[in-house]
Length: 313
Image 1 (cartoon, rainbow, N blue to C red):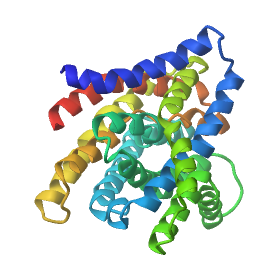
Image 2: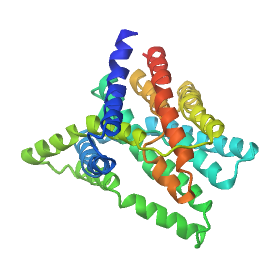
Image 3: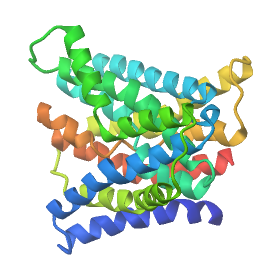
């Protein structure tokens, strides 16, 4: 149990540091937003490029890992959509609930977690997760969110706009560029490799501090019961579905994963809701609801991640 705390506790101490820095006004909200933009637009793309360009393609495009992870995300989306609809949720909050249930924070929290739990595999796991999340789960959730608005334009046009906007993000550009460099066997010069490593090293700590700052700055919300249901779906249902699908596919001989990668699928699904959830809900005027989901899932994941790591390792 002490070993588990050594892995989980530093992550939440870094989050608490970000929370404290904002609450004590050592850093302003705008300061933290600048740091957050650096992490998401510079540090994480450098990390992703490094993982994709320097690892064997069989590692960073591992279909045996991506298949159960993708199916798990789609299953959670479907179950959440049906369940929240059956509970009588309005279209907008239903769409937001699906996103909050199925989009994990594998960029900030997940990477830091695996960097401590599985340091050799952490960059690969991050790359695999981001491929599935950014090219499948997040775009589908965005489409669902946009469909809840009174936005003009046909379905195909909307899908095209969403995918185009995703492809233009620095993370995806880094992912695709790194894959191309690897595929064409283009050598990365030593100074460039060192420069990228320096930028990538900033991703973990700064990312966690930014999450804490975001939690300190969230607006209050009132949908406690509904937010609690989304939190439960994110940190309880998601890993349960991931385990069932991964175990089933493994038992059927469809996939073959090492024990560490098997555990990584479940742990990745168990991560709290991603930090930019509040940003996505602004168009629907649901920031208060989203703030409760983000806060609750981040705190609750301390317990669930600790329990899962104890069970799986």
